[in-house]
Image 1 (cartoon, rainbow, N blue to C red):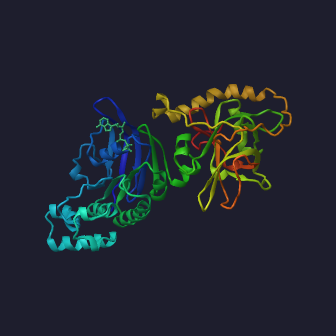
Image 2: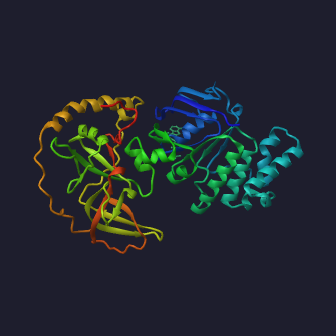
Image 3: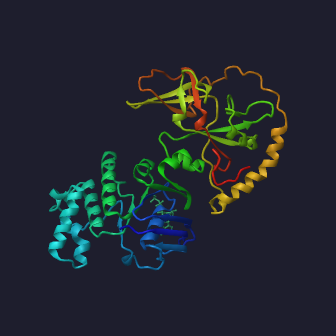
Length: 433
Ligand SMILES: Nc1ncnc2c1ncn2[C@@H]1O[C@H](COP(=O)(O)OP(=O)(O)OP(=O)(O)O)[C@@H](O)[C@H]1O
């Protein structure tokens, strides 16, 4: 049975003074599969190595099955690790490599043979057992490495990009095998990757790291549909979420509009949208996933129109990706300031928000003259790079320069503040304003 793993404000500062992991708190249930996801250098391997006992913990507490484990030797943690380049013993056969942890424990030969056979059967490598690593492909070697990890019947699996060196097709196949092996072993698993597709496919939950700090932890569906910040929003999903610069206008005598520069999106008048008034005039990042946009047709009540021009067409067989411009400006994910890295950052967001409320409410009360009807916007003459990407039916025929009406599903609208924190839909932990 898998162990519980609890991290309480775990930090790691390397001897040179670099803090690779910053105040990370997490709790894993027995048998849970958690993916640690983040860009290169964000501290994923460091965190994993601290849990394995291969790296000292600078501060914070690690509990395994509720027992303090900061100083527990690696050999006493019942942890099996699988790395990207798992070093198999080159002169041993696959069978001997798999058997090694049991042989080292001095278990009975018959028992070892039975266990190797069982594991090899599960991993589909029975016919390869008498080969040495040099006679195996990369995928086969990684299966042997998995076999060696599984045979110990660990209560915790720690996997550090185990599929990174394999080709894309093999990665897809092996990841389902990994899932079935760890599910059967009922071990608690932490799997490190920088590949968001792999994270979405494997994780019961995903923990996103940036610069050593935990950004958000949740199910793949939660992280995708309600990312806490623009970094998480843009890390998950292919094509990436579209991020645009925007400003909200909230005159008291008419509906609110979201200005995207050349064009505006009138907001539906719904009770939940009223709180948006406090955001009036603040620089916002507007997040629209590709599936929130569609071409042409009659708008549904929750959709708004934008004039768009095609800048680039990508044919992928089953779908076509359209790059379009609407005259708005693409926004980058804000870089974190040192304050954003602090654990209290999330709680600081509220005072910061409250600080703006007075000014924004005053702004909302100032009457803004009704905007005159806008003519079709001046879209650029050259094709340039479009700031929006959307999926279109594979049989849609269009070329750069074509103009069309883009429909925006306002139910899928996300807004982030200048720090990248999501302000709409409203974060649940913030009190009513
Ligand atoms: N032994 C060390 N001494 C000093 N700094 C280190 C050491 N090991 C790692 N680092 C630094 O700590 C940071 C986090 O490294 P880590 O290997 O944990 O990141 P990662 O997210 O696993 O990266 P990747 O995906 O590229 O493997 C990096 O900036 C790295 O340079």
